[in-house]
Length: 223
Image (cartoon, rainbow, N blue to C red; front, top):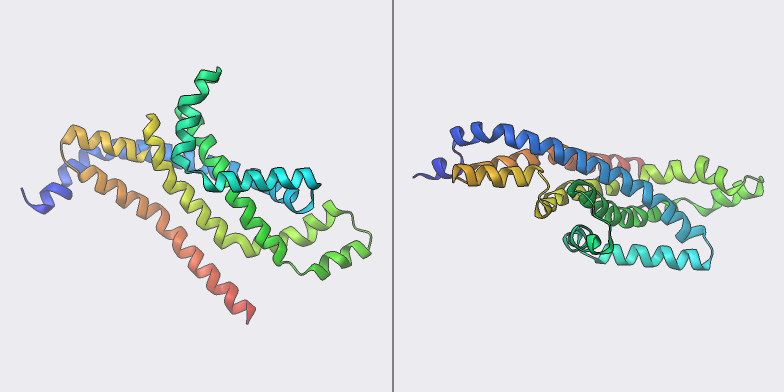
């Protein structure tokens, strides 16, 4: 059997395509949920770390450090296989979303912290001098500028989250990789895995290019 017949068999790919597309929708839903929840969790974390009391800062720092250090796969296995012993049984989708979101929130918090600290402190001091309460100057002055600065790293974090969705296959989640693996087993041919790789590239490559273009635009504005 030739290289093309083994890895790029059009007939096998055509037969596996319905399974791959089904897995793609699951991957998109899982990735979107994890990115959104991670960003929603990262914002209060960074606010606690920067502006909270001493105990709140220590808790936020501990959370960020621990969840940046733990591998997503280990966390996913703990959530899916260990929590049932404590009486909490989660579905594969919920377990994968929780694991990815918890880790994503830690990274999002650090990215947002870098953006907030990059805003000139004089602007905040001026807002305070005018009597603006902290929620107001945070919403109108700091966050709009910080968000523009952190778009590239947040996009890179989102790309990593979507790639990490492939780990959900270990808990029988019917994502793109799981469906490709099943199609490979049915056809006794690795072409479905190559097809899944092509789909991942087609999905994430525009995001990678967007990060590069946006960073170039920021550098030109800085000059």
